[in-house]
Length: 281
Image (cartoon, rainbow, N blue to C red; front, side):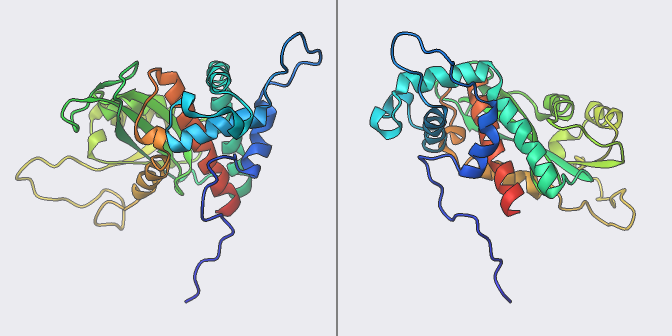
């Protein structure tokens, strides 16, 4: 049997944003002013984005980035990153790449899945809490909704102590592209098995496929899906997408005190995933 042949690069260049991604997102960056005032000219957007890309993948401190690497000092990188985050540039990246993915591969709306992942947040900050899975240390959660292939369509940030069910409505009603009107299925694990979650899903037009929390001593019953004796294994795609996100060290451990800055990193990473899925499948 022949192996699957792909043109996707085997290694990630930490110092340079991939060209296909840059071509799509550069239009959303602010343009240089026509008339330059006194002082140094503003740093090039491509160089700044490359510096942000490096911090995203390596998880280093902003001040660890040297000027001769990208031609931009670390203070300018951090300042430009926060300005872009406040202007919604990274949220726009996610929306643009979702539309690009929909154009190239067509979003598989029939099945969607949600899940979350807790990461430590040693510095604390907003949207953090005592993690019940990490000895009550400070942590944060990233919640994500994906399509049938695992393409991220919505992300949300909360504290690690917040239950997953409280983020379902934020995910469903903040999908970055319009949903079609035909019937769609919603997959989730036992952590979402609550009556209010099922009510939200029903109101949003989904048919829920949430793994039931079976009480102790109760016999296992068949799934309500016709022709299937157990719940289909469709949740693995969202778990795979979460593992793709945590390959980036800035997302494996949250060092940002501001939740908005960390969300910007997550949105940038999701835009990269969508770009790769659109181009390489």
